[in-house]
Image (cartoon, rainbow, N blue to C red; front, side, top):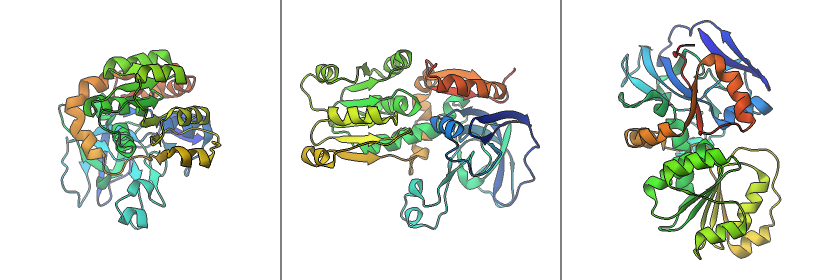
Length: 339
């Protein structure tokens, strides 16, 4: 079968590989219907930060159909639409036992510690599969995992009722966070991104207002209201430093972006202004919630898709995305699409 495998930093190959092996107890064979390219896929390609096995079929955001079921699997049948839980946890550490699997001491991800979804088929434990609505477009279903990440980030931010929210970065997570807020929140949503086309797409879909990350522009948009909720989806230390200057005393800055470099913070400034920093990693129990929202959000999710490609086009898509040349938020791979 055809698959996209990561060998090392900068070394991504489209190859014909052997079909998945026979199913073991508790495993399911899934035919991939759609997969999404994530910012962490790009980060791993660029830095090799999370390569634990080589080569490995990449991709942790995907949907598919059950093609075969191993012994001992309950709750799924052949033909069911499913989405994948990207997290591979130990299940025994204090975090897992405490209901915080997203900060598992030995946390890994599908597509890194095991084969991922950038292929025609994949075998996964049934525990990592969640049944999905059959009537939802597969491109939307492939966005369930990043939608769960956005849901988790918005919950960690704890936006006050009626309060403005500023989101820096209109990539997949920032854009999906704006989408969640447009559905849940009754206050203004401000977005900023250096890619003007992408910011415009998010604003069109969510009703958010585009601002520059300057005190003058943000103050004008706030019209006297304090800025108590800020979400960084860039991971860029310079952007985060700017956001720390923009957030009002008593506010929260939630960090969900994966970036590079370190950040110099004056702790006295945080103390005196009582600024809270909230890290947001993956998702906790939000994936079923994200799947349940699919029928309601489907049209808006599809409006955020940048383009749909085949497996052969994945390396070129990585290069395009790393250069910042995108209009939408999510590049969707459909392995079964015509070349």
